[in-house]
Image (cartoon, rainbow, N blue to C red; front, side, top):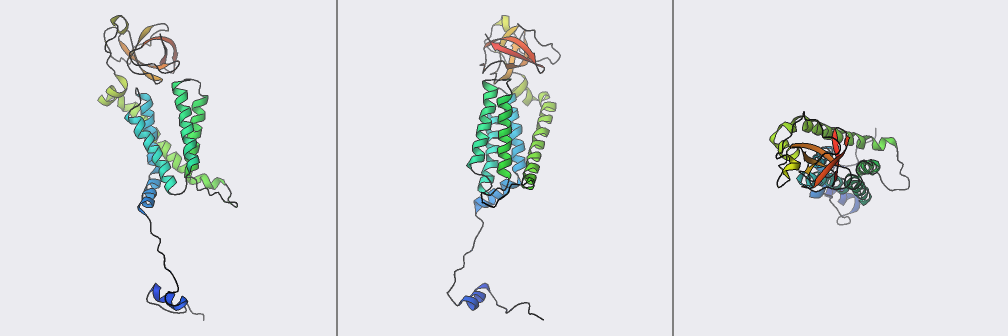
Amino acid sequence: VPLLGSGIFKSLDNLLDHKYGKDNYTIRKIEVTWSEEIATYMNIISPLLMGIGGFLLFMEFKTPGFGIFGYVGATMLCLVFAGKYAAGLAGHEEMLLFLIGTLLIFIELLVFPGTLILGITGALMAMGSLLWAMADIWPTSDFQITPALFHAPLIELAKGFSITGIGIYFALRFLPNTWIGQVLILKEEVHNTNKAISGGGSSLFPDTPLPEVGERGVTTSDLFPSGKVSINGHIFEAKSSLGLIKKGAEIEVVDHHDFNIMVKSI
């Protein structure tokens, strides 16, 4: 019967002394650094970071200007890449692809609203960069890309989108009825505007018919490209037909689109 072991030693040092001779070897201990521990936790919660980041960016597009929602949302998405980068899964290429995709989305929103081509391309690039960053791809000669490689990343991406979708649903369902929704999304006071244009008031009536094409008013927030306008004393959600329109600018209704009104600066 063969032996299960050739000897018993009280410690690793005794074993190495017996095998290599005393002081004829070097022991190196590899310890997990604090940055690697943080990267591990960040990779665990990466779907949550993606979900909350996407939700906050949606909220940013629904509110005037570029504020806290945009900064925090962008930071959370950057943390996803930071965690993958620290874990050795992501490189600079994925981050560059994400930045280019985000830039195309902003160009679509600010410069060419309604074209869809830039926005869809940018969104696909951003999602592709996230998927790429989560895939365990190694640039070796014998490495092969298989569908199984993207199984876990697709699950993470789906979890992130689910969190974003749930957040958007509850925001659209309940936020408009809260004081936060009134301040951030629905109501903006009109100051120093022409009474003939603003109607002398600023309120939001959900049952109020949309203004006709050709009617004029003023913006009560920056149109980025979406925002709020005041027409005949009522506040409406509107979208700029071309470029950014600053708060307080006179506008004219040019079309109705997706239950909103399209306006242009005059």
